[in-house]
Image (cartoon, rainbow, N blue to C red; front, top):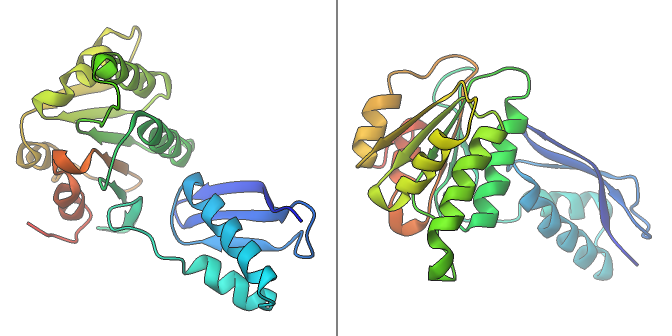
Length: 218
């Protein structure tokens, strides 16, 4: 048997998909509270395990929806009506950062203002550190993210690369600390805004995401 995901949809309320593949539950709709495609594969694995164990479909769907996720892993926070903060500061590799930025862009496809708050990213090969940070900065622009706030000198090449990517109407700002990022952004959130906070754990932006999202941990 196989389990695939069809019709994946990402909204401010979460992620949904239709079960596909060669299995008895093909066509079932799965709704997940976390936002992002990264949660689809674990949900499929959960469904496959439930089916193998003889668990009824409804219980299997509940188990897939309630699978634990790490704190600060695309954690959706709603500090005020119409404002969404995605706190994704548990870890950051180039691949997970780009995936999170694509999710941010998709959530703002209706014209909402999107803001990426990015810190340093973990890179396996130190010789590719600058190249990977440059690539992320350019992708921010290519995805039409409205604003970019880069936190910390270790992430400065994200800011520099965004500024060098031509014909961007957005704004990139480099600040030294999470406190400065909050001072810049915290009082400027408005209805419709979507904010992504993404960094490696060592960059320490998780508490910034909590504060922006109204779950103040400072």
